[in-house]
Image 1 (cartoon, rainbow, N blue to C red):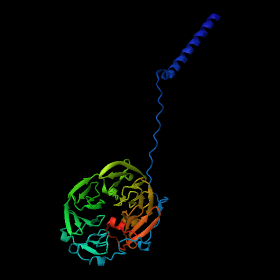
Image 2 (image 1 turned 135 degrees about the vertical axis):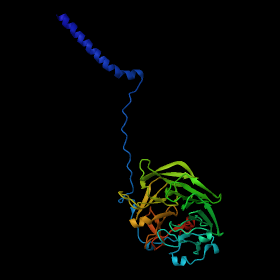
Image 3 (image 1 turned 90 degrees about the horizontal axis):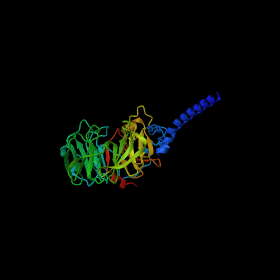
Image 4 (image 1 turned 180 degrees about the horizontal axis):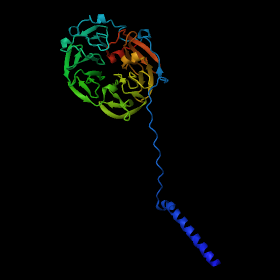
Length: 382
């Protein structure tokens, strides 16, 4: 009896030992074969939410006051615009001038349809007679005009194309383009090309190359781009996951896309408008014209294009930002702003870092279309 119990106990012990060996074997196998167990995949982190410059952001500077009340930033521009006198100036093709620092629509209204007048650095005004140039009188869309940086050339647009005026030679050259009523954006710093788009905010961007007398397609969108004094272009890039915001800056060099892409510190709404000219360290953007449902601050946003960091935002009222635009960067410090909406408006210079605002040219009208020869204006700062 005892012998049978001992045999039974030994059988149970052997069965238990066999079960433990079977369960240990899979755990020892990776070490025996040199394999390493794969850890569980980490959970993906949630995407970073889009953040605009909010109304309570420390970047917001509430410095607005009438341009005529601001401490002046002295330049070659006049102290004021007298449109009655401007319209009485000599006709340009009968009395040419060497260059112009300022071009304005002779009819101060939101969408100017009058003639264009240009002012020399010495203060002499001339009226451009479009009829003498074979151009139509625009009755539906606003007049388009852009001065070259050195003020020697003026580009005009109508339904038949782009006309380039050589101010000193009283000579006009028409360039036919496949676009009615082109929108002129900016000149290259060397004054050899003017960038434009077909009307309708299309993404297609074209350039008239004056010397070669050709019109060519460009890769970037002029609506969201600026050109700096070196000729490099910076373009706001939209977020691939959201059609409502720009979240990066793409750098272009010699009309070619580079590998330089900088993430923006703060997102920029897609209805924002960039200034025509930037500097290597300063680009201005008018944002917030239509911020329904958003907590962003309306105004002019200053960004460092090299780093994507926001440097400041000048808060403006809804009426002001509806007509406000950034003319361009005067240098690495000052942004030239066009805020020509009613009494108190005009051209102003803003330093977003030192939080200074200076008056450049009061324009006490409902609105006025202007173009500046930025190279001449920057050289005249004093």
